Image (cartoon, rainbow, N blue to C red; front, side, top):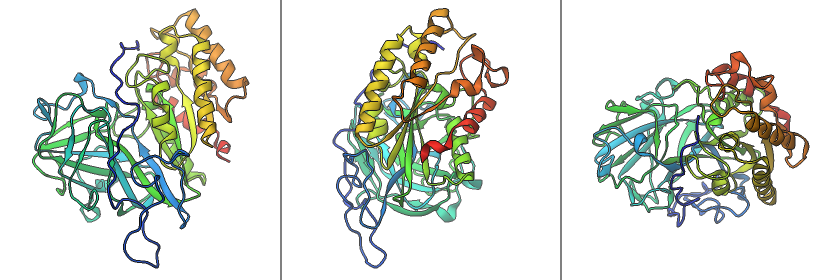
Length: 433
């Protein structure tokens, strides 16, 4: 997998977030009405300590699902007739997401960070998916809830910004599937829109307003658009793990609509082993690089947005670098970048984990020089004591200087589903203590 040429990265975080007037903390059980949350954690802005702000009731917002936002490339735009001079004009898009921690109260973040024009949302709803399945076009209609924005059914997200919905009451079990439907009457003008191409999950679209429909039956695609986060109103003991990565974490080689990327499989393992209070958030994208180039903003430009500035974050895992090595980036450059990221995360009071880079023998990246760089970077990750803990993914799925045969998806670089399962099974759960 060669690194693509550099693409416009856009802002590294949303600027000028639009803050709904009623989207913060729920009222105490003994009171009526709604009170404002502690500023700025609950109102669409970023808490100075990475979003980990707990109110007097001992609860806070915690990211239970995120998607690394990037500018949508021309080849990943919605299918006709949902693109053109106005994207999703008079159309509904229904998208499903796999949450990690459960809650009875959530909010949804909509992103226009890479848009060059305002994003008008005319109506939006959230519901549990039919049969708790990924990528389906149907919902459990008895769970359907309207999303509002400052008390209004509609909102306009300014270019370069994000918007939160008001909190909504819906019973969401851990590791379950949510369906989020967005309708835009006018659509978003231009060709610069925000999304995530590697959803590994089917999204459905249909002309007209169908946010309340039991099914959306038009065209479909395996991309997400405009959705950046779902947050749970959770106890202070709950916290979020933000995983910064590339296509290995984004799930290249996994099965569409099966939730068998390694972070999804880790969610299942955490739930089974008494760690249901940890939100696992996938902030990775195929082709992403640490230093420069690649798809989406390089890690050095996005780690603050995608980790430090997320809600309820307690832990950060850095698992990236293979695309830089494939482009002949040096070990010294990667080590310097990782050191900067770790320093900033620790300064924000977060625990930071490093992950070793698996081998890529048999891939176009493979060369003796690139292998030497990988080994040097991995040695530093394992021995420098820079990180609070290390996850040795390379050891888990390697056989010598190559991926183990049953862990190889076929290209020498990306793990198979069995490889992703081995990574989730081998993840050291004691590092969360």
